[in-house]
Structures are given as structure tokens and as C-alpha cells.
Amino acid sequence: MPALQHFCEWLYTTHLSISIRQSAYLFPFLETIHTLGIGGVVGTIAILDLRLLGLIMKREPVSRIARQVLPWTWTGFAVMFSTGLLLSIAESQTNYFNWAFRTKMVLLLLVGLNPLFFHLTIYRKVNTWDIANVAPLRARLAAISSLVLWASIIIAGRLIAYVNT
Amino acid sequence: MLLLRLSHWLGQTHLGIYIRDSSYAFPAIEIVHLLFLAIFAGAILLADLRLLNLGFTTQSASRVARELLPLTLGGVIGMFLSGLLMYAGGPMRYYHNPAFQVKMALFAIALVGHFTLQIIVARKDSDQVRHEALLKAGAIASLLLWFAVGFAGRVIGYV
View 1 (spheres, each protein chain N blue to C red):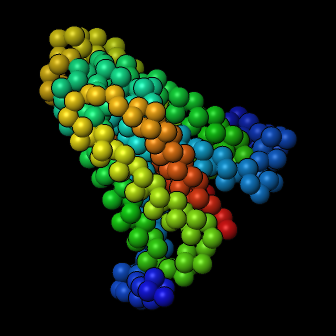
View 2: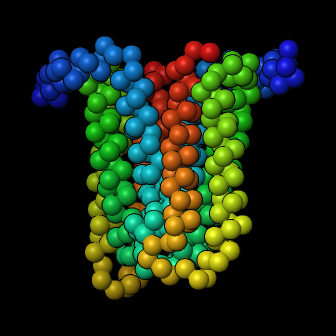
């Protein structure tokens, strides 16, 4: 048995996992907060992405929008991550075999690499294109991949509840 | 009851029957509803935070309200239409569902309240800071109301 599967099965038997599963209200409650947290993350990052694509707030420099939006994106991320962790602990044993859950984890990894790459490359020279109506091609590609990846994460996340392992 | 008759009719349309009988239609529409929610929630959050002076303070409140209007308005239209399709797939399941009734009542209040506020702010020409306390109270009410709408929405599936 793979180590990760072993770990998930152990996690499933922990007190925390069992209490979330057995409570009638805890799981839906966490799920609601998780969904609203996703709204916070994706909705705010989408504003920055749309600015990079030159669709909104064209008169505002990109770096200013980034500075204003990102603290709220990270706040949303903290909410999304902590509730998501509890939800996956509650269903660790079944989630391990769930292809939608696996897909979502891979997509989350990719969506994390995207800003890392963006900040280390094209965003370093942001002062040269900060006030441009439309950002350079590489920045626009980063914006499009961010939007596509987050949309796929929402789709995969919702499918977890529908697919049978 | 007009609403009841309308609901019955909606459930009997080809579209309503298709959504009810297909095993993929409902999850697909639900996902579209959530995708619109993500765009909508972020735009609402930032529009209200601006009124509370907690974000986007480098731009005037009226410009932020104006720039975000296509996202909040587009988001709410997308959510309403996808929501209507979910409703069409089984109107009677929702019509008598207390969580759904609460959600619709809250939605009506939030819709009128929030968009009145956002459009008033967006239409201001200058960046005059009159009635600031009133705008802040409105922004807090908007955030709480939309939060309650989302919460009631999730409860629909559980009662």
C-alpha cells in the first residue's frame, strides 16, 4: 500500500476527521465558508488578471492594483486553505481515490507556480509597462492561465461530490 | 398564486424536463453558477471594501464603483440565469424549501440595496465625500446580506 494512501487512511480514523463527519452541521458549514473563500481568492485575482488583459481599470497602473488586491487574495486564500484542509481530512480515505480531487490538487500546484513564475520574470520589469493599457504578451498569458486554472479548480472541486471513486 | 403557477409551468417546459431527467445537466449548471459566483463575490467584496476605505484607495470610490459595475452586474445576471435553470429542473422541490424561500427574500433585498448603492456612487462626478457614514453602513449591509444569501444557498441542498 502506498505511503500516502496509508496516511490518508490513518487521517480518516483521527478524532478530528470523525467529528467533522459525524456532525450534521459542521461539514456543510465548512463547505459554505470554503466556497465563499474561493470567491474571495478567485474574484480578487480575476480583477488583477482582467487589468493585465486591459479589460478593466485601464487608467490605474498594474502594480498599484496588485498592491491593493493581493492582501485580500491572501486573506481569501487563508480561509479557503484552512477550511479545505478540514474538509479533506474529513473525507481523506475516499478523496484519495477520487479522480476529481486528485485533478484539483494538481491544478492547485500549477496555479501556485503561475504567480511564482510571473513575479520572477515579466513582473520584475513592471516599471517599464506599468501604465500600459494592455500588458505585454507574457503577462497576458500569465493572466489567461490564471483565469483558466482557477476556473478548472472550481469545476474539479465541485465534481468531487459527484464522481464515484 | 401567480408564482406557483409560473413555477408549475416552468417545470413542464421542455427545458425543465430535460434538466430534471438528465444526470449531467444539474451539475453542469451548478458549476456555471459557481463560476459566476467567484467573479461576482470578488467584485462585490472589492466594491464594498472601497466604500469602507479598506482597499483600492488609490482610485476614487466612484471610479471603482464604475469599473466594477460590469463585473457585479454581469455576475449577478449569470448567477440569476443559471439559478433559474436549476430551479426549472424541479420547481416544487425549491418552492416549498424554507432555505430557498429565505435565500430569495434576502436576494431581493441585497439586489436592490447593493445596486442602488453602487450605481449612486458610480454616477457621482467628483470625488466629494458627502454622506460617508451612510455609504459605509450601506457597504457593511451589502456584505452581510450577500454573505447570508450565499449561506442560505448552500443550506438549500441540506434541508
